[in-house]
Image (cartoon, rainbow, N blue to C red; front, side, top):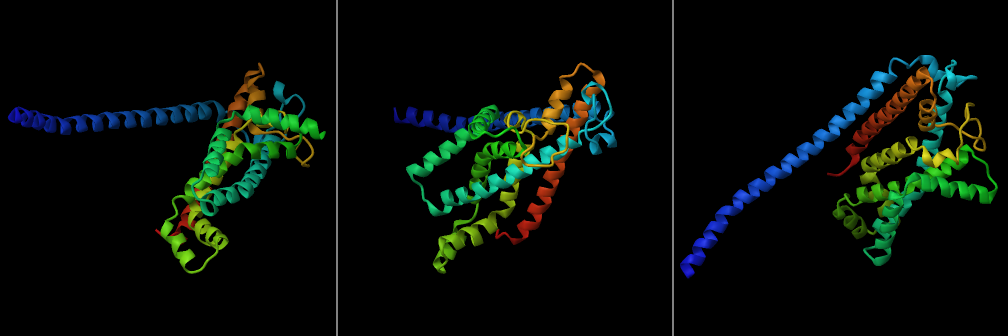
Length: 298
């Protein structure tokens, strides 16, 4: 019996490397398959936007506002939507950063693991998953209660609520990557929590915080549902916080909704402009992150 048991154990030990190898091979296949699907999807999206949008793109379309009958084929452009999207996304990202960074610092530096912190993180995760149309409905109800009309300010406030949980959770995950030895050394030298938070943690996490800002900005500039009822839409250039403002996602939607073929092609051109803006912001963010990484302790 002991010999049989030892033989069975030896056979089991021999099978383990084979099973591990099969598991590793299967996981590699799954990872490569997922990467292939993502890459193909991205290429198909970019290819469609370029193929249908590039022929319809004109300089006048970028630097002119819509004229009378634009959505039925008349001349004009989408300058109002470009400026409106930039105003909305930049304003909302700035507000979410001003609110989200202190929240993330409080959760990471000022408070240790506790039930309250776990609940706060769960709440942020839930808010991250809430559809943007719900934020739009909430913002619209709030505006009605306050007696406000659809405006650039209303869109910025509502969009900042969409971006806030993204900013908080992304920044907090970045702060977790700061080596704990740095904070411990700062505390040992007599630094206060405020000094540790802003002079050590934030300084070391600046490249990651830049990426978090980009993530929130990308969500904001591409969102349509939250600003449809709060920012409204207009063919005029945004000139006041208290007047309606257009946005590129809604411009794409309204142009695709028309039965005129030429206007539908302009919708793909508008989508191409939006993609280029996000791409340029991504490149700028990468350059800033590389520059800021010089001051990060490895």
